[in-house]
Image (tube, rainbow, N blue to C red; front, side):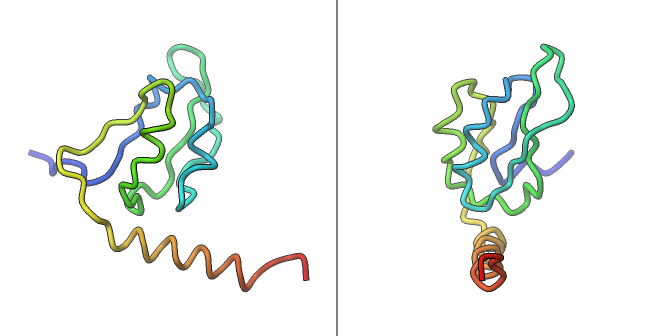
Length: 97
């Protein structure tokens, strides 16, 4: 028996590719999808889902209800570290200097 997911999961068959989640995820875990689903929509892709912090922003903004929420969402410290390092990387590697 597999371990239940500890983070939000994207159901690509319910996603219609509106891409609202792209700009709302603090860890930028979503990118535009290139593969159509069964309904011929291009759903977003969730990359590095293990870094999801369960903030539920994507769940709240999704008009298609394309996200499955874990039964007991927990704080994901690895996700916070990932997000913090992403912000530091952007701060110190800006291309506008």
